[in-house]
Length: 288
Image (cartoon, rainbow, N blue to C red; front, top):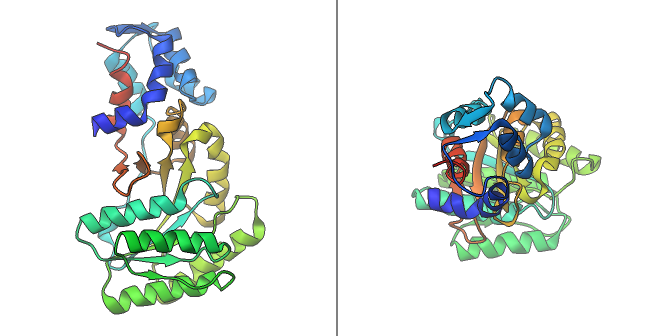
């Protein structure tokens, strides 16, 4: 886990090492501020993190300051009856479809039965891409043609899962900007239809955030959350950016769990997000 995180946060840690080139037992408050800035932590949050810290900061003091951000409830997916329905939301280009494949692979490795729902019917390419992943992972998929009603796909996928005893339903949705009202109204309809098939569905609405956008993705997430209520976040593409500190800003402002981090392009490249591991991976580059 630590090796994977070190790889993912490689560019972030390189930026931090520009501030603190050599590991030390202590760093100054000014250096702590500068390295947080380099990692793309929101400055309002930096001020909060610095508050109460002494002029010379030890590793344990830095750790306690950073871990204080991660106070949110995580609802265990196993506490829900099967099928456990997840709806995956995000803008085009965030890595939504690939992340669905990674989630499906993860559940399959846990010996769970998974079915995919291709409810992004706005783009033929999206249906084709998810269908290719389903074939590659030997998973069933409920799909239709471009332009068909996405809510019907949601209903049919959940009904199929109920009839065949599947453990997990993962539903793709059209990539959309948080400002696209028509698409977002369609998303609300999909949520209503899911509940008609299974009263508590979807059990988890997951927003995919592109890590290369850094803290700028927060406004996008806030609007989605206000519109439909987001239950958790998966952050992708952190390995391609020095903005790994944006996770702190996301957790602080959104007060919702970061569930997983994408670590690459392959189905197995998804790891659970654990705040302690994340913080220690960064601090290992700074402190002896």
